[in-house]
Amino acid sequence: MNYEETLEYLYRQLPVYQQIGQAAYKPGLDNSLALDRLAGHPHRRYATIHVAGTNGKGSTSHTLAAILQQCGYKTGLYTSPHLVDFRERIRVNGEMITRDAVLDFTGKYLEASRDIHPSFFELTMTMAFDYFAACGCDVAVVETGLGGRLDSTNIITPRACIITNISYDHTALLGNTLTAIAREKAGIIKKGVPVVIGEATDETRGVFEAKAREMSAPIVFAEESDVLRASRQEATGGWRIDSTDYGTLHYELGGLYQEKNAATILCALRVLRQTGFDIAPDAVREGFARAASLTGLQGRWQTVNTQPRAVCDTGHNTGGFAYLSRQLAGIDCERLRIVLGMVNDKDISGVLAMLPADAVYYFTQASIPRALPADIVREKAAQYGLRGASYPTVDEAYRTALHDSGARDFIFIGGSSFVVADLLKYLMP
Image (cartoon, rainbow, N blue to C red; front, side):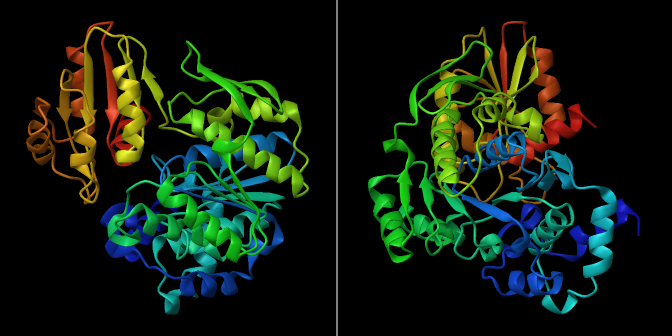
């Protein structure tokens, strides 16, 4: 099989959460441990950093990877889901895994793993760990898929753990209270391994403290640290960060939520220094300033058009839209236009309740089975006073919004990672 045929086979034969949702979710570590044995425990050949959380873990993982590679470490990065290209999930020093490496791994392990019955995520994770070892990585930043305690990635023993925040998402799998979700995320905390908590609430703080005590793990709460003295958004959309340890930093990523991520990352860098990493100030400055361009990160308050300005963002739950709705409210424009689609297992009512009633809406659906039909999104939105037409594809909705816009209008595209993925595929085929 060639590369395209191999990918199609993997998507068709293995359960893919990205496509079908919780039916593809296989909680527990048995499959991951079996695959790890089959591949010869590749993750033991380099240091790892484990990142969990409801929102912000992708931005945090990419920025840390950018900093570490600028420090001179050969750095692996494993994230999910991908937006345009499957190979986005697996990177070394910002470069995607090669097609040949994907073919080599599947040729070597796909048949041998049949008795294990892995999910797409489990096999992809093992592919990443194997590739990082083959490339001679010094360190890998590993993002969890779902939760933490039973997440496939939880077979690693990292040098540091990071939990960015807790919000309501995947409640059918992780629990319907913040305490229950926090308990699942806290499952990545390991014996004696320091953990950084980005944001904690009264409901979640005790969960993290109890787990850290149980594991004798040093714990740091970023919100209580002195790593970030002041911050403000710049005219370019990024952030100017006045940091205690590295002076003034310019953060390339522009969402409001990146201020919280910056503090989490700065705390994590202190922890990494304490565990033996050589973190150079110039590398930190460069990693923040070029976080997206060094690692290929897309879809985080990303400008895709200038006149009118159009921005897409992968925020897809109430925690993400708590920031996005504030950011949209502060946009200085003639008319705000929102291209919106969601998937069927999210709290759509919670998101719709945060959105502005004075915007023009273009309701749509992503090209995956989990997508909520555009007409249903439109009907639900009407209950919150949000008005607009529905469109069968993201590119049609976006093209219509562009056609309707004047130079001073602002277009936002989001509601789901998969809406952003369809947009980027249309813009960058």
